[in-house]
Image (cartoon, rainbow, N blue to C red):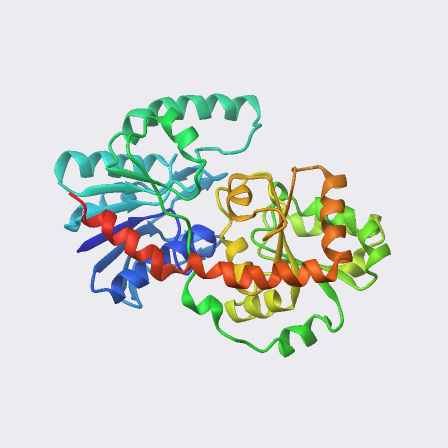
Length: 380
């Protein structure tokens, strides 16, 4: 089959959606499909080649002339460039982007291409926005409502998403959870990373993802004064690139609380270093205000970490309390401290959860997910 993906960003740009889409695309190529990706040519001041093929995936990039916040992107050629290619399937990787919506309309009018969308989450997913952004959200949802009905299938990545999807004009919904590649299970040595950040004999709680305010790292830092009392060697290891100078803000908070020696913020690291960091981790935390899934949760499971997450769509799906770890409510620092203390203080429970997660993570293997994708693509 000839399969196209459309995403605002793609490899070598990093992020959960970008990495997931790339992994799916590579697996489809291995299975004999012709795979194209239509995306933007820049992210975070990096400019990428307009055309290239990576591991068999043909990447076509359109100029992103400017970008404001997350949803306002001016990359008009994204709406048209895909029409040069005859596709059996076009699989869009989000809701709420104008030129992707135009692309879907054009595909529907001029071709017989099957249209799929994995929105990963609703348009403007947070609970609260300033008035101007709230008005913009309502207006764009009204515009997008009829477009959503053009998709042959919309994929929910957790079992709760149908609740908001039904309100947005979506007719056919299929559940396929996010997945992880086989490479996430490979063995690595932790020696280099341990020496680089002086982590020998440390009890590590880690976070992996964008260092951004809504991701909630501040909550974890504010628990450290209490956690140090029961585990003096504790380190909160935050991994990922920052948004809006967030790293400096978090360091300032840590200094005010006199826990700066218990906080390490690495910035972006390599894939190899990521695996090393997770192997050194006892508890992985995802303290976000909102997550549709949080692929990093299942990556951490695959490296034998216990999990703590906010009660998001993703956290509620991945974590059964006492089995994979624990949940807490966003901004409830008392509950977060209690859940972390429970795991830190009870070594036997911690080890049991870590072993269980290592085993449980196998069900998220991409080889299982690809079978579901191919079946969906081929259905008439």
